[in-house]
Length: 241
Image 1 (cartoon, one colour):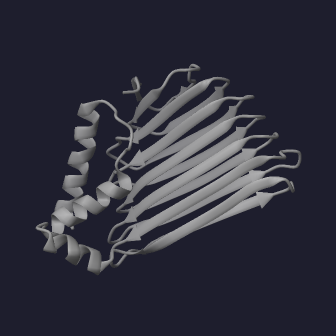
Image 2 (cartoon, one colour):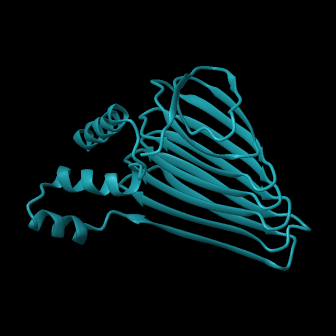
């Protein structure tokens, strides 16, 4: 298991140390600035009991590596902006897992500034009844960033009567010798899949819970008490629908 430093954060700027893995428990508006020249994994968990705004800016220096995971199972509103520049030989991996039961806006902008840099983005969202999601994700490869890569994938699962599930993938490419792609899948829950799961002994809520887990739960092994808390949130959501 990877060791993580767990920090409660509340309405402040936070600067991360190099070569340290963090879990940030966010309870209020947060401005997070990063400047990394080592290797780190950052997990940001929205634990707020109200609408909040998270602003994340940063720079990955030469040959640095950062994986940043946003997970939000809150029933409240979110305004998330993430803007990170990637230097020569550096690699950025971004994972977003978000549950939308009210209005949530996400704006991501990741820039390959120098050669041999890499950006990989994986977004997963479930939009519930009355949920309103506006997600814009931009990969930007600047002139001179040759032999760089920018890839993004977004998948969205919607329930009936959502207000909006808008996802806009965007690539801005100003260099020839690069790799770049984006993929988007969006749709309602497949009733055939739910029926199949129920024929295998699961009731409707248990089947929904399994689907939500497959979209939104963390792959990493983290503190068990935090995992239990996230699973409890999923259970509470399933009881509402």
